[in-house]
Length: 290
Ligand SMILES: [Zn+2]
Ligand SMILES: [Zn+2]
Image (tube, rainbow, N blue to C red):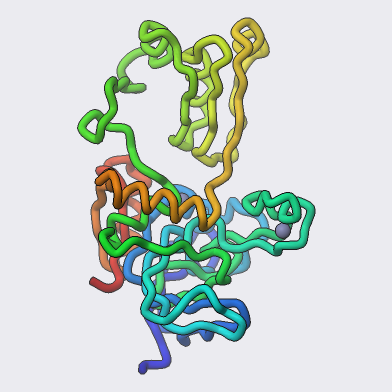
């Protein structure tokens, strides 16, 4: 086997992606090496590219929506076998011994790792991840279709099963939601603090705005928007490997799949710009092996 691989990395914050040849990493104790088949291009990759996330060491290979096959296992790995198809999402590992982990709340681990941030991710032919970060991928799911489910989940477009579609660019979305009776829950997936703040007015009595779209900008909401209808705003981190596994199983069972535009590894910069342009329908995925 070739001892080197192709990977796309960010050499330093604010620079374009760079295609490099680097050594294939070894799986250490408790780790699994994955031969990557597909990796979703996520808006959160911008944190790594633009240097907006604390603690990232460069150069760094991004990518936290990874699907591939187990290629090698390190010492002490008992759950996974070479050849098995697996995925890694945002949650890239946990310590198992901190206060959050001892409460079973692994996603909030105080020493938690993020795939493609804390260690090299899926914009590469091979990557290594801790065993607890892996989710099993059902045989019936295509790797390209499965990749975005590891972080982004699915969109809500009409033809994908939604009953109503409200375009936030065309008029007042909060007023439109109120005409429908107000929303019990709004899942804010778009990384726009400005939009998120306005949507609070679309909540019904006791409604909750759940924020998934990560952005460093502050959200402006007045106490008056919240108090009168006892509304609340809650953040929600991405899921653990077990949550990813359930999402993938649901996708296989229900036929709800992601829709993607596919790019090769050497076009990672184009893939990223396409995702940032908001024109992609709906997700951008880098395919490494078919
Ligand atoms: Zn993501
Ligand atoms: Zn922990």
